[in-house]
Amino acid sequence: MTNEDKITKWLAGELSDSDKKEFERTEEFAKIHRLLEGVNNFKAPEYDVDSEYKRLPENLSQHKGSISLYKRISPLVRIAAILIVALTITYFFNNYFNTSSTSQAWIADQTEVYLPDSSFVSLNTGSQIKFSKEKWGKERHVELNGEAFFRVKKGSQFNVKSHQGTVRVLGTEFGVKDWDKYYEVTCYSGLVKVMTKQNSVILKPNSTFRIINGNEENFTIPGKSEPNWLNGESHFKSVPLRFVINDLERQYKVSVKAKNIDLNQLFTGSFSHDNLNIALESITIPVNLNYKIKGNKILITFESK
Image (cartoon, rainbow, N blue to C red):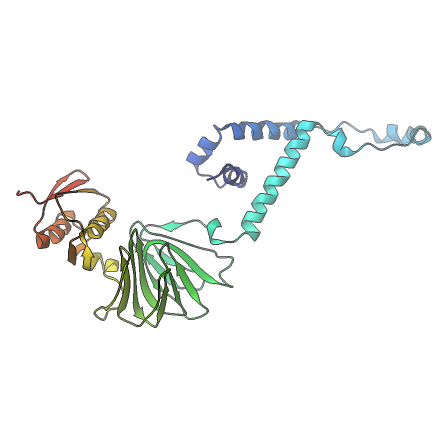
């Protein structure tokens, strides 16, 4: 978060307690505090209306001149006023005019989200989305980090943009997975258009488009209405073992170290999200591996038990 963002959020009272304490220890806050004290302590001189009225003829007879109110205000108060006005304008602009998705907060971690048009999104563990409520009436646009399932209401064009591609639909049900060097889109109903830097693909129901380590492929899936992870299970079809292990780490919030293992060997199978030991057995037994658990750290090896 930039200093300007922190100042704006501090003025609006939107900083968390920890961020507020951290910001109030900075030099920028000290300067602002001094300036605001100058504004608060500024006091206009007392003005006696009757006395000044009696002196009016004398004042009119003297040399006429004008003194700018700006010049009469102390430099400190001038700076404070300018700063406050500038910050107010910045805050107003960011919140009312600049409604791009970058100004929106990320919504994260296996959460069910209803978008402004009642379209439904379910986020897998470690995933995030963001969107602009203000722009939703003009464009239905969602940014995604990670994996999510979408049930989109029929209407105008609906886009899901992630690091490796964009999915475009009008109204349908589909899943998107975008992790490092792994991109996958599955269509469950309707039609889905997938656009990447290299290709553009139309998906029909029960079909998947995938890019792993730069290699593209299309395949069909058994008829179903939603991804397996919504029911507490991660499923893989001919996926390099490294991506299976990465998913295990996200689901169970553990750290896995692989020793003497070919992480590029392909894995087909699944593991559950409710029992770590069973999940590890589901991964290691099919490929003849062993594992040891110590706290939240796991070692997977070829070594004998």
